[in-house]
Length: 210
Image 1 (cartoon, rainbow, N blue to C red):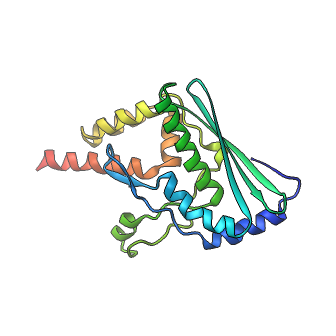
Image 2 (image 1 turned 135 degrees about the vertical axis):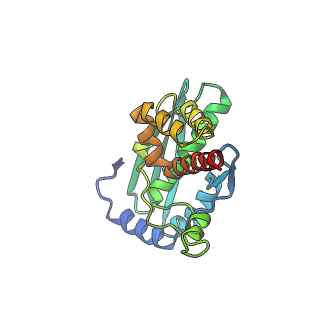
Image 3 (image 1 turned 90 degrees about the vertical axis):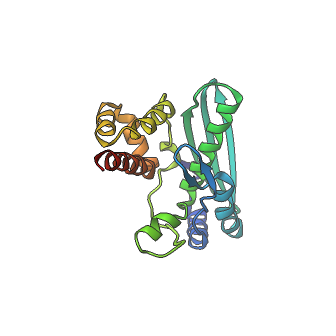
């Protein structure tokens, strides 16, 4: 991350804005994992009002070189102070669809990270007896410069999802044989996907033993 020489004004404004932000609603469906996530529109809805109220504008500039996609996110304050970070990832291929999806992915995670918010987690909160719709304000999120998707990660994730349908033993074996960078990226950016995989694998094992 890079910043203007002084950030006292923008830091103070960002702190006030964050205090007014709620969680981003998980209203987009992931058909593969049969779950929902907060899409870019939901994240923008959660942060734009408070940021604008306190004089902070968000500018996101995407670019691509082949399948390598990057997004520079700039928070600019009315005082002239600013914060900037760049996020990069490698798309599945260099088609417009893949590059567009990767760009949206980076914009979403960079904006969440700068704003310091996490999605509302209705299901998990309810399952753990903490009420419905509580907002997960304090969950850690990676800073924008760390959101880099390893090459081949998306294909690996698809394969792991398929392996989960074969039971816990098979999933654990595949996990141990996987690249460390893939495992680290999954557990640091979306640990609930990994928990969901283990949950499905456990159900398969239960069905087999019944």
